[in-house]
Length: 311
Image (cartoon, rainbow, N blue to C red; front, side, top):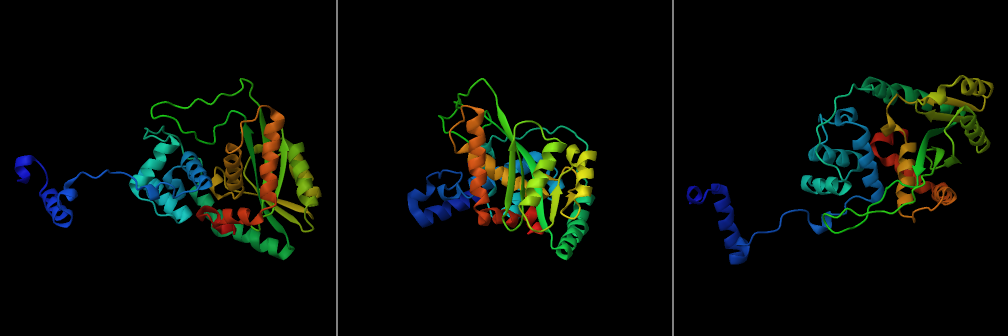
């Protein structure tokens, strides 16, 4: 029979089993796809985090055994980072929801050095942690981020096939922020308009010192200004109060402050679109004040697999 109608024998067997269990009803074609209860397994902040990770890195940079981001690769990333198991088909639904499509990747030389990252995790950070303990220093992780009035961090429902249009002012404006977090949920931040430079960084470092009675250990990425001569000289003069350390290049996934940036942008997406720069700046401040007063929320960042080393 299978040969006559052109299907596999296993399918015929399955039909027979379905008929035995449910009768005629068992032979009705069932709708395939994601069960409704599976559609919201990830929170908004978790979705934003995974999107950032698969946008900024390739699987092998995160020690996943895949060359490219497939549904299975993203599924394993979610399982490892968030301890949430998602069916591969469900993962495909998430990727479509996020606007991710299979594309041929451009060739690019690796910038992140896996050996440097491993050395950081196994040697450098443990050494910093031990040194901080001896000096009774407080360890912060810092980072810069920027938000714009025309960024679409959120999503909007619309009829299928009709992309929603978000009306926005033709004038573009943005604000920048430098922030730092500890694994105890402490947050410090500074909002500014122009590009980061040595003077603004030093201003933030002064603010950080003033906020604590202990010596500050601040871990940063390798932005050029962080290594500037002016900053080095200032830190040298204040070495009894603060010390700077640097993450391996091109390794945002191991910087806890990146998770705060994701939290901020997700929070801003839930607010009304700002009509001017003052409103945008106020929105940023409101969300950051919320995080500053909610250390338990910030401490949860450190449960993510990539930064649990810093917990």
